[in-house]
Image (cartoon, rainbow, N blue to C red):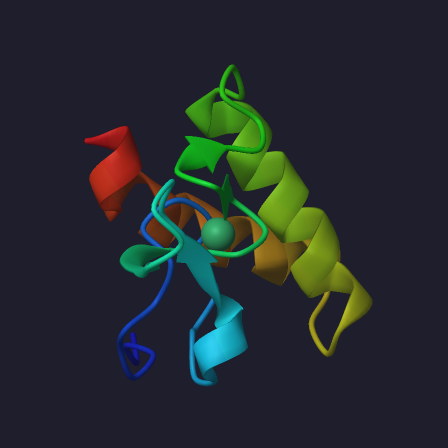
Amino acid sequence: MEQPKGPFCQSCGMPMEKPEDFGLNADGFRNNDYCHYCLKDGCFTEPHITMDQMIDKVAGMAGEMNMSEGQAMEMAKGFIPRLKRWR
Ligand SMILES: [Zn+2]
């Protein structure tokens, strides 16, 4: 499987390319591990989400793009568990 070019969010797996893609720490500085959807002001936007819920969410988003829901689910199941937040 092809790895996306890093860095990518260690919670949802979104690739982070532009400075505004990155989440912010409580001190306003950029957090290199998490995207701005997952991390706001140093806190997770969904602190109680489980790994399975994240897989569903990511598969749903990917399904809207260019792959089937099944492919998206396979992909999400393959990479989400390896991210830092879920290990
Ligand atoms: Zn994220």
